[in-house]
Image 1 (cartoon, one colour):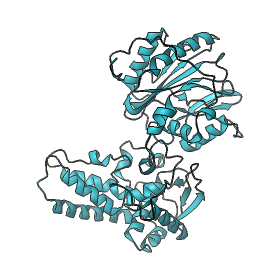
Image 2 (spheres, helix red, strand yellow; image 1 turned 135 degrees about the vertical axis):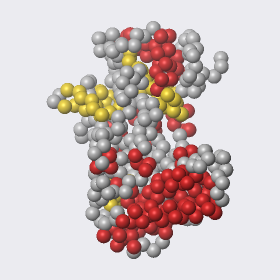
Image 3 (cartoon, one colour; image 1 turned 120 degrees about the horizontal axis):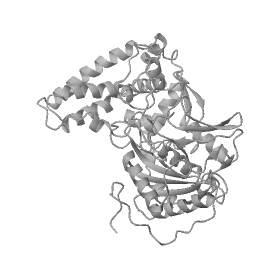
Image 4 (cartoon, helix red, strand yellow; image 1 turned 120 degrees about the vertical axis):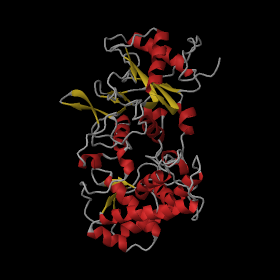
Length: 468
């Protein structure tokens, strides 16, 4: 049988060999906290931190609403505490199988038993599981919707390492339902993502595996999964982990020594600067350089961005008419211009703190961390030393020392401590009054092109919250 692909015209015929399903178990028996957090962050699809579903109880009834001010990491922890019996009040979390590019790295099917026909739901779930379990390119997790597998409906989750279009996922799930004879309609089988009738719609969300069901008061149970042996170990870790599915639980990887340096050159959160600011057409060099500087000033140190400019010129296709020396001279001029505008936006107290700094790394860190403080609503934010070190081109240990120094200088105040493998430390900007977001605020261009994390800035500008 040829390797299965998500964009194949049809799935293989239903296999007849039996998949043995073990006894249903709670999620915390199957997954470690780290693994389950990683699954949830994988399901977030690199969306903003407030792009998820909040199931809860209100006035004795189940309610479901999209998050607005809540933070995904806090909600994941709360949902885990609910599943493990540690939460004082109960909650759950769900995710949307889409993102701004209409892509996802997971999908799901809900086999309902609302009419009491649990046998039908179980039969469909096991048949669909049997189809997808044997496909090496995807990874599955079969769960009950809530509690007892003899009485409950079922959720079947399908994961991939890479993003695929929502249309491909929808077609795949339709093919599966057609093969097993399951009608796609409410009360029988619902697929996620479904077809988008409105281009602005974000579609429906589904609760994460094993989470609490507010309709029944029970948590879903895990019947079988192929994530722990295949998908989860393949997710990035260590130096590559910032911004990936494991980042909520990891702050400091083990170091090789005090002089350990960040590998490579920071080229954006996920390396996107290499393509976003690439010179791929004649007479665009100056424009792309200006865009690079306008973004890089807020996200990385001067020398790191200058190295990006050097790579930008050397990688240009076709080769620009100007020399590398001319390109870097224009970089210096552009950087100085942007920096003057940024300095003009500092408060008197901030400017005093900034002028007292003695090294370029400290001044770069001041600018980067201040920008991070702008992208939160409540004023409290996290600073991962690995991410800060990568952006400054310095060692993780050096970034950690710099962060502590900022606390000593009154630039930052730590509000919540770092707990190894559990919780990333939180900080508040104290160099001056919290930034007033108004029309004169200098906002980096990258924050207006669909990048996540700008609730406060968009609100200040009077913009509507982005709907995917």
